[in-house]
Amino acid sequence: MKREAVSAALPAPITEAPSKEELASRLAKVQDLMERQRLDLYVSFDPVNVYYLTHFANNVHERPFLLLIPRRGRPTMVAPLLETSHVRARALCDLDYATYYEFPAPQGENWYDVYRALIDPGARVGVEPAMPVGIYQRTPGETVVTDVIDEVRLVKSDYEIGRNVHACRVIELGHQKLLEICRPGVIEGMIYAAASQAMMARILGDIPHANIVVTRAVAAVWPPSLSHDPHLVPTFGTTMEKGGPHVSIVFAQVDGYGVEIERTFFLGSVPEPAKAPFEAMLEARARAYQLARPSAVMSEIDTAVRRVIKDRGYGDRILHRTGHGLGITGHEAPYLAEGYDRELEAGMLISIEPGIYIPGQGGFRHSDTVLVTDEGCVSLTRAPETLEEVTIPL
Image (cartoon, rainbow, N blue to C red; front, top):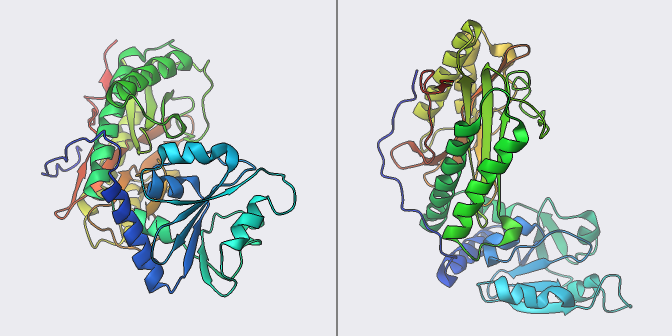
């Protein structure tokens, strides 16, 4: 069963860096939510959130970067002296700067000495749940653990959607290359190298100044002897096999925008026992596409999709939820999962990937990057789907 097609024009791909107006709009949404939560200040440590608001990307190490966001006005970046010029070169929004010397450093010159001096002891201060305890303990004021920036990131702007559309064109190229070279006897390392190289070449051709900290491309295949265990990562020497099910995973974070595409496919022939679970997976996937529309409760979607798989006799072969969010990263909120009772909204970006996993036989999962629209949803990724289409002749 092929999923029901959704009629919607795809947004145009975008490769340009965000404008100052785009970043200002994100900040305004954060500050509006801070107002509703009665926060005087919000402190962001998560590099993903810092990148989202500033276009500056960093790696976590012993010298922390801290973005202090007031309820009104311009944020302040607390950064080490070594990195301040780096922040100024990459950040595309208006920032104030508070520089500390080094860590460790003499008394008065550590990051926490500078950081604490910027916060009123009487302030109501929001902090991310992911904030390290060492920073949390040095945060003055009444601290409130809350996901303000993550909440704002759930619904994408037109600019963000355009960036993700471009990223989808990159991974489609990588997936096509993967299918071209994946044959019995070919090792994982050859597939990874060729497909990843093709994607990186496309990225650098389209975005010559892409930030290496938030740019990567990965392509791999789980052969049938492994595909029943979707997180048992193969080695570079893993060998592809005749038949199937093989499961591909192609992911890219393209200058800070993450998308994925995955397919179950067969080399040469389809084992007879694989046909029924493959069709059950397609049926569950089609049900998810049918239900994924604004106002639908995500836990209810997951329950309904699971019911399709259970009714086909594979209820004990489900290992994970129906889908997860994408955007700045390849795994983030929202979640098509039981226990997650939020409603879908137009502008959310999700994966749809119900799976069936049978030891001794293999895994069955297609995944696409899907945009929720006013009318329903539309897949931003394109690849073979039906059993005939995913059976590769040898």
